[in-house]
Image (tube, rainbow, N blue to C red):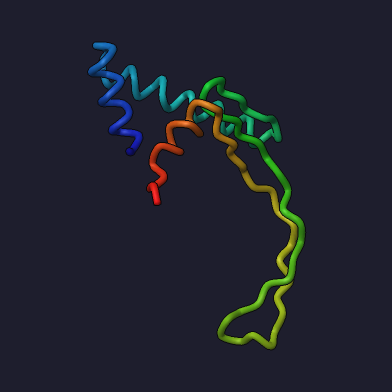
Length: 97
């Protein structure tokens, strides 16, 4: 699903214009990104939690030159932890043995 798909779906369901829905969706995403850029945690009830974590420095290897170790520096990354309802819905996709 793309942002466009989301806008069209919300617009059809709420009977609001697509331009208005696009503006709201874009502002929402901008505010989430802004909060994460400040190192804040973003918690959306019944959806999930976005948070910034710092990955430790580690040693990597180039598969084409495995004899040379490459130092990978620590870096900040965004982690997402799904909420209970989302986790339960996604678990329904698990194929049964």
